[in-house]
Every structure is written in structure tokens, then in C-alpha cells.
Length: 319
Image 1 (cartoon, helix red, strand yellow):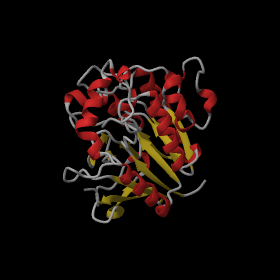
Image 2 (spheres, helix red, strand yellow):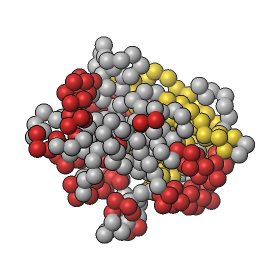
Image 3 (spheres, helix red, strand yellow):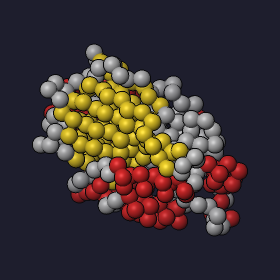
């Protein structure tokens, strides 16, 4: 088994344009999202930032890219098709792992008009585990093993009422997550859990929260994990999930397309280098952020964590 792996996390690109949307597509909650895009989001989420992101990813050359949700604005079928092209520009499905966000499930939409366009990027290494008659239920949790890393993808994308942006996992997904964490832990893998909504209770507004965050944390406490990654908040977030005797580091990142109209909200992405150490793991976290003055991305910080076996880590260096 390989002893190291180098991957990137990108989140919330909101990469699609709504310029050509027909009014007949907006006779539901989507009209609110469209108005938000017209008023604010189209000024913040910019194509030139995504172009700079792709160019920077070519230069940094991660082995794998994890996209933690919200590729679209209001989950229209045309947006899913457009997002498929963007995913292809990042890499082949075996090199890019995607999980959905709440904007990708803005209202209930059939699989064929939505996630079917991305299915190769969503699926586990063994796609036969998906029930073809109910692909939306069977795709998650997904499991992809790359070198010494197990990437476990979850879906918190559930349609919510107007003015709400909540997400949920559900007991079936949580039970399966526990099984995957236990099995991959026995294999000695570095377990990375991917989800869109922030998983630590109390870290998000009530109307935008993960409804079963406490249950998720119980699963992590019971089975362990080495790293949890999320998006959703459009700002840098670093937190911890307590497990017996130690903690699990949690990172959330800003939108990948944000030009930075609000201070501290400019686009960022993370690079993670996982290395097997004498005892446990070494995790290097590099943050690269968009520079409006130059129109490109640059490194703004680097952190090293010593992650012990069974998910423990040294707090030294953790902000």
C-alpha cells in the first residue's frame, strides 16, 4: 500500500449562469433563488475566478479533487448538464469525487434530470452496489479508495421549504457510514468524510443547519475518522469533533468562485498531503486563495497536523 496521497478540496463553485432561464422554470422555490442570483450572487460568483482556479489546479497538480457540493444555483436540469462539462474540465471521474449540496437539490427533481449527469463522479469504486431502480438512495455513502486514503462521500442534499437551506443524512445513510468507517479503519486507511453541510452542532444558523448533526457526531465518535471536510458556509471554518480521548479535525472552505465582495469570503481551495508516519499520520493542509489584484491564486497558509491512529491528532499547529 502507498504511504502518501495528495488531494484537493473545492466547494460551492455555483458555476452555472441563469441568464437564459425561462420563467416557466421558476414557478416554485426556484424563483427565490433566481432573484437572489439576479440581485447578488451573479456579482459574487464569477467565471474568471473559476478559470483561475482551474489554471492553478493544473500547476499544483493534486492526484485527486474532492468537490463538496453546490455546483449549481437552483438545481435546474440545464445547470446539471453545464456542471458536467465543468467536472470534465477538472479530470476524469476516477480523479474527481463529487458530493451534492442543498442548491443541487433546490426542489425535488428526478434522478434523470439531475444527478444522473454526474453519476460517474458520485459513484463508489464498485458501482454495482447502487440499486438501479433507486439510484438516489443507493449512491450514498460512496466509498473510493485512493492509495492509503478512504474517501467516504455523503449526501445532505434534501429539498427544503422556501427560505430554508437545511440538510439531512437520514438513519440509513448514517448506519452505512458507521459500517464503512469501521471496515476502512480495520484496513488501516486514512478516513476522509465528505459532506456539504457543517457537521458540528451549533456552527450554522438554524435555517441552514444539518438537522442530524448530533447523530453524525455520534457515529464519528463511535467509529472514528481522520478528517471531515465540508462546504456550505462560504467562509473558512476550522473545528473539531470530540471522540473518546481525542478529536477529529473538521475543515470547511469558501466558495470556489467567490470574487470576494465581502472581506474574508474570497475563493479558496485546500490541498491535503497525507503521509503515513511512524505512529499514525502526518497531514499537511495548504490554503490557496484568489488574489483579486493579480487574478490568480496564491498560497496563504500551511498547517501540519500529527494524526494518531484511531483518529487522534496533536493539537500542535491546529489554529
